[in-house]
Amino acid sequence: MRGDVGHVLLGLLQWRPRSGYEIKQLVDRSTRFFWAVSYGQIYPELRRLEKEGLVEAESDPVGARRRTRYRLTEAGRTELRAWLLEPRAGYELRDEGLLKLMLCDALEADEALAVLRTFLADREAVLERLYEIREQSAPILRERPFPSLALEYGIEQHEWIVEWLRGAERRLERREAVR
Amino acid sequence: MRGDVGHVLLGLLQWRPRSGYEIKQLVDRSTRFFWAVSYGQIYPELRRLEKEGLVEAESDPVGARRRTRYRLTEAGRTELRAWLLEPRAGYELRDEGLLKLMLCDALEADEALAVLRTFLADREAVLERLYEIREQSAPILRERPFPSLALEYGIEQHEWIVEWLRGAERRLERREAVR
DNA sequence: ACAAACATGTAAAGGGTTACATGATTGG
DNA sequence: CCAATCATGTAACCCTTTACATGTTTGT
Image 1: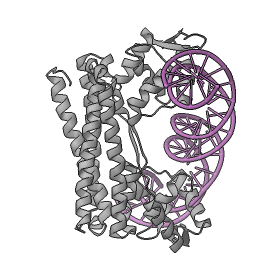
Image 2: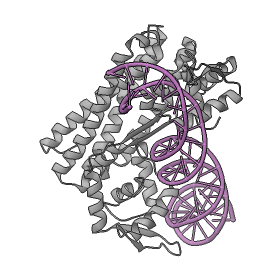
Image 3: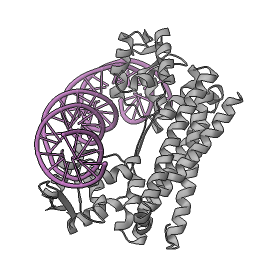
Image 4: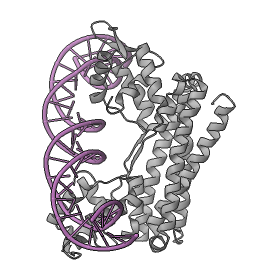
């Protein structure tokens, strides 16, 4: 198993069978904040997982519209658990806001402030989105301790980020030495 | 300008001319925590930036070992400033620790605890590395407010993360409802 | 002498996103 | 009837990492 799309899919199928479309919807309300997955990965990967016996396809059409839901097999659950227990926690970030902030020595003070505010606005928007998701998913989250834990982590971290950036904004506004 | 490697290079050349090798060393002590760049990108991109007149190459060999340092041109500085002021702050994260934590419903309580601890150990290691960098770069950082600000952001955020994960660890140890 | 660091580069492979294509169903 | 959503899929493109190649200088 090369990248980790496969494991993400196994993970998201642990609670109940889902179609590729349903998985994509779930991804966009959950992992996409720390692990994005696109259709271009989902459909081919589901077929690969099936070929390896880690999931089973069940046809479940709605009228004439076909729909294929995938169910985690025992082998799939074993593979999922093995991967979860591997002692690795890779981390990779592309943060354009922070990158630009670091390079602001090239700007005037008021321009740097604008850069910081863009950064801040971006994080505020993400935080708002996370609040929405928490509200909309409240019933499901009550039954799922770890998704719930991950969401709290995301929310509280973004709250911290927003507060920190607001503090930095105030310091810049007063033209204080940044450090 | 397609990806943003070019802008990162322009940004890192703002203080003084550097060779590709020197840029890579700088990247590995600075942006790599939120914007990684590899040799495979640096050397071709420097030549592209030169062809576009955004940097100037100056040959500066050490004995028979060639070395080419690149200097930001006025056009390059203009381009850098324009990019910094664009109101965009893209954000992309691949966080395997958080991903696994979210999927721990598939595990026993003690196994989930192990996943959390791997996650925690990883962040502690990054935090240690950031402390090292702060010490080693202290003299330079005193003269560079924004790199300094970005480093503080990174350190304080990782301190927050480590504390949060330790709290979650305690809750899991006591088998408390996670949320 | 030798290893480590300095210095530059390229090709292949890998991974991911985007854009497009196709068609059915539901709700207004 | 029309738009939005459901549902599946692919090919092209883009970017990045990895692995390798080559040669010099410095420090032990």
